[in-house]
Amino acid sequence: MKTIIVKSQEEGGKVAGDIIIDYMSSKSNAILGLATGSTPISTYRYLIKKTKEENIDWSNITTFNLDEYMGLGPDHSKSYRYFMNEELFDHVNINKSNTFVPDGHTKTQSDAEKYDDLIQSKGGIDLQVLGLGVNGHIGFNEPGTSFESITSIVDLTNETIEANSRFFKNKDEVPKKAISMGLKSIMNAKKILLMAYGKSKAEAIKNLVNTKPTTDWPCTILQNHADVTLIIDEEAASEL
Image (cartoon, rainbow, N blue to C red):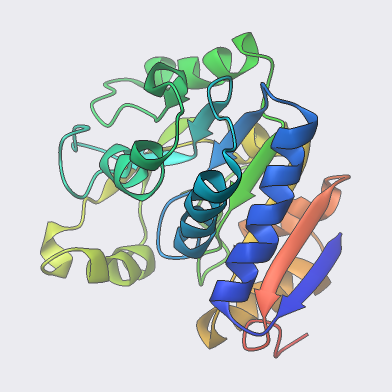
């Protein structure tokens, strides 16, 4: 596991963005796993800037997002499909038919699992981008999630609902369930790039790096992956 400590989220966005661009340069039809939330926004803004400056070609890139809120359709302003369009896809020359986000109207677990089948049918994820929850979740894989989990309909913890309420008018508006790639789904990626910024992520980073893999801290599964890069600021690194 490689750790890069940066001064700010903006710097982290540049470092992460350059890693993604370098990978796309080496493989023009790369399959990227993408994340939402506040953490990757600086990365996406940097990617848009560099794409315009250097005429980077996204036309053969395929993307799979980690998760989606249950009950929210793609046109809902708080859905992750809407977020991805606003923050990245609308600003680069990617073919949106090659951008996949779990369906927030999925009805059954067997239907949820078909997302993994779709990923594998495209060749599997080359580079997976991750954020990190304060309780150690990656995707929406909350503490207690099996390391063998694949894409599933999951219940969100009160802690996660509280953390995500900043994106909604109030806590009551936050969906209580999501559909999320599982931990096994994430571990199938060839490379993993995790970003975390701020003091609130310090305990999770400490456990990610130093704690024996345990479902109490889902992120610790990443210790079992052969190619993980952490990009964290000094506050997130403060308990290492």
